[in-house]
Length: 261
Image (cartoon, rainbow, N blue to C red; front, side, top):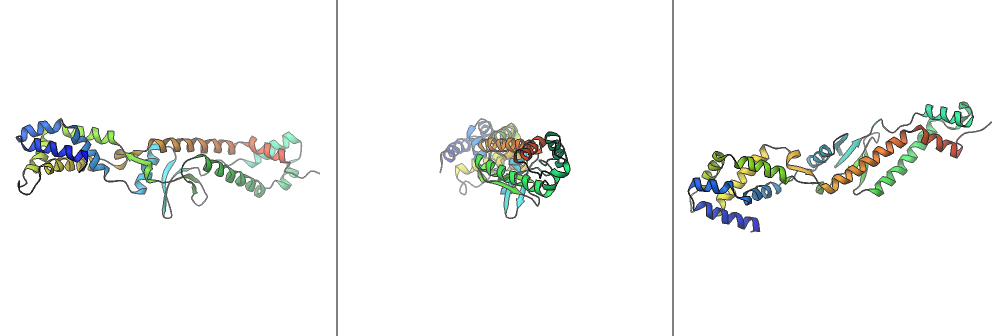
């Protein structure tokens, strides 16, 4: 029996020695009743996909839970983002170098430029992977979802929400009277003192659970939240950089990716 359970036993022994009205008044003031409800709900946990949804919803934006075969990941949808306009790039190279588009295009074909692009994407992937906690994943048929594998410790119990919800229930004196009355109805030979309060705590936890969804009961762990914020900034920065024509103009000119006359 842990410390909380021992405290609940003490409460129960007090309550079972009172009249029902006295017991209701006593229960309304018991901090350990709140702790008992939190502890009771904490024995459950969301499955991986529900947990990933909690994380994604907490981050917001384009983040989502995603099933990748047998794995669950939390990813940002970046499909269609990060791709430069090669025509614009070649036009700027022509203006800066004076070399004709035809000559530049003789070597800088779309296939070559795409290989150049994906080579830098792979480099960026390695950089990001080494700079964050967790395993970076790129999933989807076109690799358009970047994020992290879901880890069970990414979420934690939202104790404040559970406590506030329980406090609201405890203000309902008729409800508490009914729940305690249900406990008192057991034959004294068949129930221990602490089970009266166990029933109260269990029923309060059940009501909070039934009236809530995973996003209420669970929240992203603050350490992981900061990690996802960091990853989001890095992906946003990479997309902005990769979409910039100037980046590729500089790379092409620096490496003289063309064939001169």
